[in-house]
Image 1 (tube, chains in turn yellow, brown):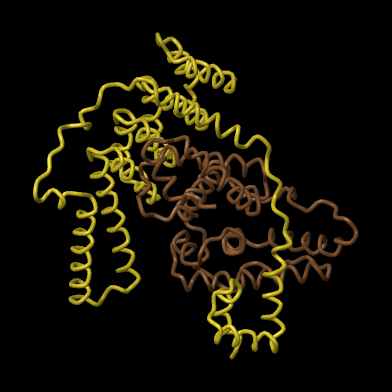
Image 2: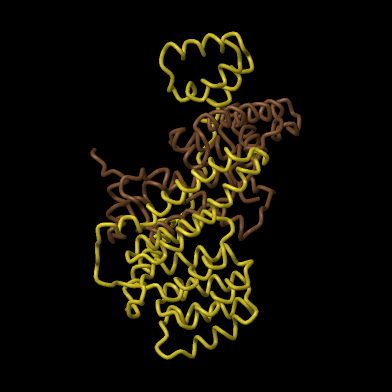
Length: 268
Length: 198
């Protein structure tokens, strides 16, 4: 058995995951081959690396975050948005309108079109075909995101937001939908997740503007704090002024007021 | 001792019992911290990222699908958090050698010396190779789970582990001979290892 063949087996061998016969084959090779033996030796030596020394107070820090989070969620919510909780309705074909079904349909249609097109014209190269298919798949996934963001259940909308993070580039419509979610979704977690997703697209002026505008109308202290942090990170030029405006809001949550103060000091 | 499965705990968190996340924090804090610290070499950043992972679990708890194995799921979040960290803080290549083992007693001197060199060799690998070795050697993930994390085939994972191990071995032996391990970069053209999104 040569090194190439052994290479296929070695990773499983290293973890003791080979059945006896093949493990013996590897062992026989190792007796003859110094290089492969050395690979195994170095793998075993990795056990010598000490575990990095942990940081103190880690659990306390987590507990503080957890408490702040729970306190933030306990704050009163603003009324459910129009996208929100209508009376549940179920029809026989409703499942066809679920995002998963939409995706399945779209992929099936795309595949049919792709192979049919491929059969008719063989002029384009294989890699070009693949590139086209990839970009179409990407825009289809974005359609699915759009559809999921409009679902009634918060968990599906949340999935829509996390689904959007698989795409490096998002269409303006999807960005607009995420911004709408950030401002109007009835669920705090969905709004927070939308902010997370949008923070990756800070290069788009539309996103920066939308996120900045969201600060003033936001009701949940959790989201307000997250927005302040995000805008601080982006070094928004008007941030200090916006934070002062925010501080003038009557009945502003003390935690948010404090965070705004902290951010203003940080800018100066 | 009969431990409640991670997946069961995560379902409780998903259903609104945030306190239960504390149990998962206790189980996963050390492995995740070690993952980051070994990979990035900075304990402060590593701890921040672990905290970020658990905050994200809180926020995204409703997107956890019942039946999803928890360990690969949390590592996916951990990898995303790291990518976002790099996006916000463009890569600082210079490592702080914080993890270099402390001075060892004389009888362990040889071992400490080897660990030191091995650690340096590991830090010389490109991050993709270091990551896959760390995932395979220290993080108790099955190869199939690593394939899922990295978005590639099982066989590709095995090939990458083997190549990374060969590079580590070369770098380590060169350091042992007192040579700078300059020849330990990507061995040959390896398009599949290009970092996604860059």
